Image (tube, rainbow, N blue to C red; front, side, top):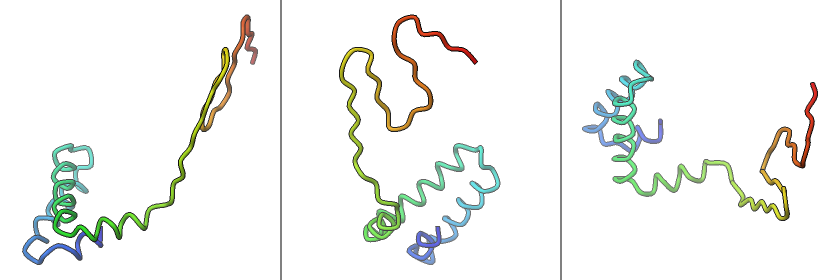
Length: 92
């Protein structure tokens, strides 16, 4: 949020501050969250280089390809317990 604040013009900061304050005071208020999102979007539109700077701070993600092939095959990136087959009995 500090990066957003720094990029706002002094005239735009009171509006951003009010949106942050309202969203913090009422975290369940969808309208307050939407108002804050609008303030952030406005700052990003006015400062396109900020979007690039923020993106470099995100963790790198790699593409994941998962393939299941064949009858009763299952596939997942992470999975707990999976049972397949006919007449499967599950006991505690």
